[in-house]
Length: 560
Ligand SMILES: *[C@@H]1O[C@H](CO)[C@@H](O)[C@H](O)[C@H]1NC(C)=O
Ligand SMILES: *[C@@H]1O[C@H](CO)[C@@H](O)[C@H](O)[C@H]1NC(C)=O
Ligand SMILES: *[C@@H]1O[C@H](CO)[C@@H](O)[C@H](O)[C@H]1NC(C)=O
Ligand SMILES: *[C@@H]1O[C@H](CO)[C@@H](O)[C@H](O)[C@H]1NC(C)=O
Ligand SMILES: *[C@@H]1O[C@H](CO)[C@@H](O)[C@H](O)[C@H]1NC(C)=O
Ligand SMILES: *[C@@H]1O[C@H](CO)[C@@H](O)[C@H](O)[C@H]1NC(C)=O
Ligand SMILES: *[C@@H]1O[C@H](CO)[C@@H](O)[C@H](O)[C@H]1NC(C)=O
Ligand SMILES: *[C@@H]1O[C@H](CO)[C@@H](O)[C@H](O)[C@H]1NC(C)=O
Ligand SMILES: *[C@@H]1O[C@H](CO)[C@@H](O)[C@H](O)[C@H]1NC(C)=O
Ligand SMILES: *[C@@H]1O[C@H](CO)[C@@H](O)[C@H](O)[C@H]1NC(C)=O
Image (cartoon, rainbow, N blue to C red; front, side, top):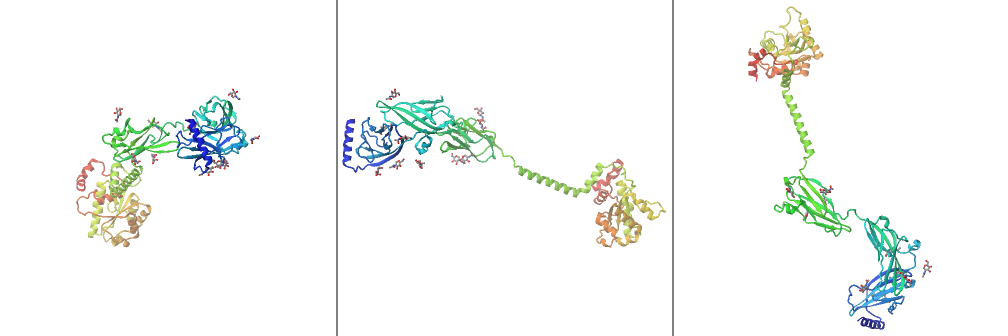
C-alpha cells in the first residue's frame, strides 16, 4: 500500500514537473524561526484532508525538485515532515508542502528564518523580535509547569531535557524535569524570567541538541478564587413596607467552568418549594455574563407581596459553598416627619397656652393668688391697699351714683368680700383735718390709686378736685404708683380731660363700670370686679376664714 502511494506520488510529481501550472491553492502559511546549528522539523498537516490517500511533497521555493527522502540527508522529508538535521544560515527561505488527493491540491507555506545568536548573549538577543519566543505563564501560589516545544517526527528520540533560567541551570528542588515538561511547585512571583530548555535527541544513531527559549510571566490567581463570591447580598437588612413588592438580586462571581448551583433558600428550603402553594415568593431565572477570567451570575428573589411573617425571616442566597442572606425590616418612621409633627404640636401647644393665658389671664392670676398667696399683711410699710379719689358730691343725681359706688359698693366688694383696706376721702379722714394734709399723708400709705370718673366729669372734676389733689396724683404718677381708672360711663373724648388723666388712661387703660346701683349685693366674681381685683395688690381671695366663705355663699351661687 505504502509502496503504491509512493509510486502514485512519484507519478504525480513527474506529471507536475512536466506540467508547471499545477492549479494548487495556497491554503495556509506559517512563520518559523530557529537557531543555527540545531535540528528543526515541521509537519505538513491540513486538517480537512484526513484521507490516507493524500500525497505530501516538500519543496524549497522556488525549486521544483522535491526535497530528498533519505533520512541521511541534512534536509529531508520524513513521512509528512520536513526535517533539518542541523540548520545553516542559508536554510532561511520559503518551504512549501503540496498536499494532493484525487480531487484537490493544497499548498502550505513556511517562511523559515535562521538566526545565529546565543540565547545568553543579551546584547545580540535584543535584535530578536521577542514575539518569536515562546511565551508561557506560571500561576502564583499553585503547582504549574512549563513545556519545551519539541516538534519532531517519531524517528527522533528524546533523550533528556535540561532547563535553564537566565542562562543558569535550574537545580532547585521545587523544579522537576519530566520528559518535555518542567514541573514547578508552589509558584512564586520571582519565578518569572527567561527560561531555556535544552533537549538531547537521537536520530539515526547520532546525538543532537535543541535549545529553545521561553519567556515566562507569572500571574496572581485570586485567593480563594475557586470559592464563589457573593457580591450581594451582604447579610444586610432591607427596609420595605408590608404589602409592597420586592425584588432582590443575588450577584455572584465564580470561576469559569464551575459546577456550582445557585439558589435562594428560606430555612434551608428552596423558596420555590417553601412557597409552593402560594408562589408569593419566587426565585428568578438565573442570568449570567461570561468574562475573560470569571463568570458573573444574577439570580433574583421576588416577593409579590411582603407579609408580616417575612420580617425577621432569613432569606439566604447560596452559591456552592458560599451563602449570604437578607432580612426584611419594617421601615423606620421618618425622622424629619417626626420632627415636623413634633414642632407643629409644640407650636400649637404654645399658641393655645398663650391664647388661654390672654383670655383667662385675670382668672388665672386671681386663682393663683387665692391658691398660693397668704392672706397675711404685705410688709411694705403701707397701711391701705388703695386710695379712692372721686369728685365730691354736689347732691346731683349722677353724683348720687358716685357716692353709692364709693361709699357703699366699693367697701362692700373690695373690703368686705376681698379683704382689702381702702382709704376713702370723706369716710376715713379725721374730722377737722386740713384736706391737703389728709391727702398728702394718707396717699403715701396706699398701694394703689383708684380714680372714679363720673359722667360729664370734665367740669365736675375740674371744679371739684382741688389743685392739691391734682398735684398729688401727678406726683404719684411720677412715683410709679399703679392707678386704676374707673369710668362711670364710656368717655369718648379724653382731650377735655386734664393732661394727667389722659396720661393715666394711656398708660394704665380704664375700666368701664358695669352694674347697677341697687342695694343688691355686688359680687366680687363678676367680670368687672375681677378686672378691678386683678389690678389691686396681690392678695389671697377668698380669705380662708370659713366665716367669710359662708358669707360669700349666695354671691358665689349667683355669679357661678
Ligand atoms: C502561493 O505562494 C507562492 C509562494 O509564496 C507564490 O509564488 C504564489 O503566487 C502563491 N499563489 C497564490 C495563488 O497565491
Ligand atoms: C503530522 O501530520 C500527519 C498528517 O497530517 C498526522 O497524521 C500526524 O499526526 C502529525 N504528527 C504530529 C506529531 O502532529
Ligand atoms: C520571511 O520572513 C522574513 C523575516 O522574518 C521576511 O523578511 C520575508 O519578507 C518573509 N518572506 C515572505 C515571502 O513572506
Ligand atoms: C555565528 O556567530 C558567531 C559569533 O557570534 C560567528 O563566529 C560565526 O561565524 C557565525 N556563524 C555564521 C554561520 O554566520
Ligand atoms: C515583532 O513582530 C511583530 C509581529 O509579529 C511586529 O508587529 C513588530 O513590529 C516586530 N518588532 C520588531 C522590533 O521587529
Ligand atoms: C550520545 O549520547 C549518549 C548519552 O546520551 C552517549 O552515550 C553517546 O556516546 C553519544 N553519542 C555520540 C555519537 O556522541
Ligand atoms: C446585580 O447585577 C446586576 C447586573 O449587573 C445589576 O444590574 C444590579 O444592580 C446588581 N445588584 C446589586 C444589588 O449589586
Ligand atoms: C425551619 O426548619 C426547622 C426544621 O428544619 C423547623 O423545625 C422550623 O419550624 C422551620 N421554621 C420555619 C419558620 O418554618
Ligand atoms: C428577575 O428575574 C426574572 C427572570 O427570572 C427577570 O425576568 C426579571 O427581570 C428579574 N427582575 C429584576 C428586577 O432583575
Ligand atoms: C453571611 O452569613 C453567612 C451565613 O451565616 C456566612 O456564611 C457569611 O460568612 C456571612 N457573610 C458576611 C460577609 O458576613
